[in-house]
Amino acid sequence: MDTAPGAVSWVVLADESWRYQPWSTLTADEVYRIMVLRQRVFVVEQACAYLDADGWDPQASHLWNDHRDATIAYLRVFAPGIKYPEASLGRIVTAPEVRRSGLGRRLVAEGLARIAAAHGPAPVRIGAQKYLEGFYGEVGFVRASDDYLEDGIPHLEMVRP
Picture 1 (tube, rainbow, N blue to C red):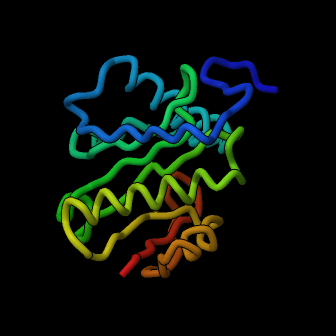
Picture 2: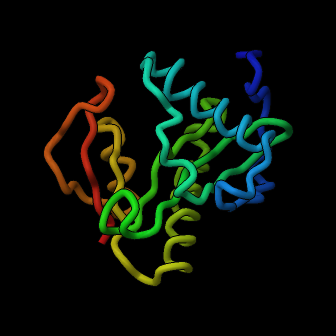
């Protein structure tokens, strides 16, 4: 089992206390745990050297779930007109230890619920890694672009009407 900082040795999924906050209210410890998960997956696991701190975080609200002292699920939420004309989700990620547990689907559902609560029933757009097209299709997203490369990884835009 991975014992690196931020690694989760075991997970109890029954306690899903979602946290949802704008950037300006996050503590240094919360930002650190979130960035550990994002870098662990998007940079180290996917072997992709890119700047994860892309400048968009201050304009997003952040949704995450911690277990013990580690963030195990995370995404950021953008209001309509910030990244796309539609509201959007981004940096959707779960820790390797919790994959195939259903937590990713619950994370996306919670993000969509937060958008609906704030903006009503409206389309949501994402920029998804191509290999996850089926996953996002299962939660109502449909392809909305041709494939494109982002940081050397095949992506596509998808919309949930």
